[in-house]
Amino acid sequence: MSLEDQLKKLFPDHQPSTEKEETAEISEHELFVQKEPMICKYEKRKGKPTTIIAGYEGEEEDFKLLAKEIKNKFAVGGSFKDGEIIIQGDYRDKIMQFLQNKGFKTKRVGG
Image (tube, rainbow, N blue to C red; front, side, top):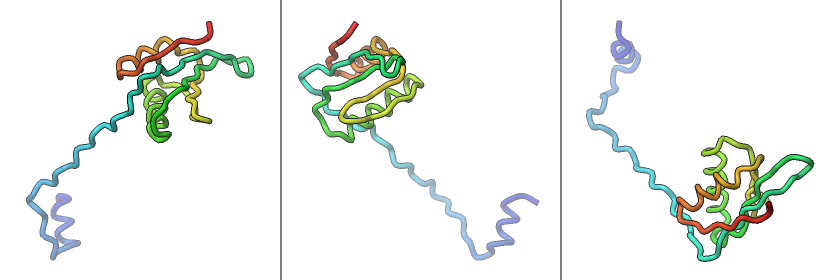
């Protein structure tokens, strides 16, 4: 007995729809690209290397989305705190290249 037959026995009054449901196309959120460069700096916090990205002038929610995108792309841990993205490890070069590909200007600070 197939699954379809079992469902017909359970729900005899149900009429399956023949129309295909149109999936809503998710458009990528457009980030505010600013004229001033974003600052990408390296620090050691509690003896561990961290990359800090600061200087975003757009909405805080957009910056949080950018932080999430960076963390997913490079498979690293990090957080968003006080208007800064804090990434665990020294990923300055990779992050700067990623941001430049997205249209942001970047400035390397520290080391």
